[in-house]
Image (cartoon, rainbow, N blue to C red; front, side):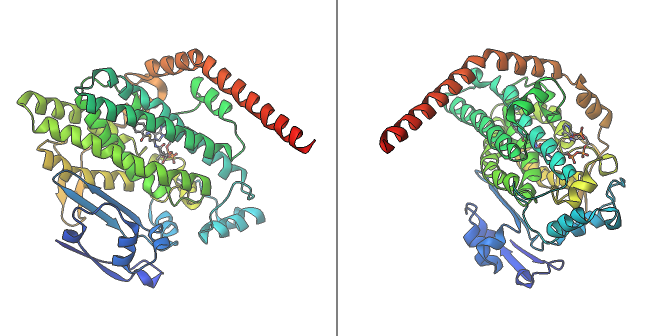
Length: 409
Ligand code: BYC
């Protein structure tokens, strides 16, 4: 199978017409060197493209998006009718804000010590801390199944995945700390309910198939959202996301693998997989955030290149990627209006129950209270670990100081 494309909107002519042979991509793990060779660019240029190769046991899906021009995200911001008018026109910006915007438009990465508009800093703290909280709270629904995983192998894999989520939270809290906010403050905001975390983690995990559905759908939706974040304008966030995305890719595969085993199992196991898909499908679509017309932050975040794609664009990508995977599993997406649109080369889909999403955001989802209770309890019972770690760090620091003094005496 061959795929041809022309990166017409690329100013960078090195990404002119391209052809990819899917057979050649078969069985090939993600390899930036190979991609660079095939597309005629350098390895650095690969970071200006969104490449995601997902490889499954018997199915290999390759998604290649040529998205090289730095101007492209700006073009998107102009193209997408977000329905909000929160972006100030250039003339309304102060001289410093204009200078900052010029750097953003030129694709310059903003680093921790650079000057930045206060609202840029606050927007990043909001998004990055929410993202970090989602990783931490996201451990709870899966941790629920560690003791009940069906085999030792599945248990070890799930345990590793849940540990990875804690690691993602740590990278993100550390990256957010470069913006002059402390981790203690961010934690307080989570525990008091001031700061949000992803709506998806307020749904219960009722069966083992939910571990498959979370990996396949929730991590799948997360990857679609997070790959563009590797190129966002804030350096520490972008760099943290590169490693996170690599691990998320593994998470999604393990979820798909659970679904595949269930779908190849008994009728009862397949029904369990279908039930999990029925319950997780719509909340996974909501994960990408409200529709563009109701997204209060998108327009400004896209102008600042914190977001490179709108919520609706990411949702559509997720659907287009996931429907063929469901077909491969022999499962039915619970949407009678889902239909391939040949003209748009995308799937049309039925209405999303946004009332449910906003109820979850207001704290009235099936598990909101339980998640917050558990998180607060774990924070309190874990106090001794933090105290011990601090005491050890202080002791270590004192020892280093004493040794240095002894050596200089
Ligand atoms: N849930 O203006 P909008 C994971 C809020 S973890 C809750 O479009 P924005 C995983 C939004 O905050 C994956 N709230 O906002 C972990 C805003 O309220 P505020 C988590 C949501 O920021 C463990 C309001 O609605 N991923 O994969 O431009 C195990 C209006 O929305 C949600 C990230 O955090 C939601 N779903 O866009 C397994 C990615 N959606 O703050 C898996 C980084 C919207 O103004 N975050 N809201 O009071 C983002 O990309 C963006 O923040 C969003 C929202 C696309 C989520």
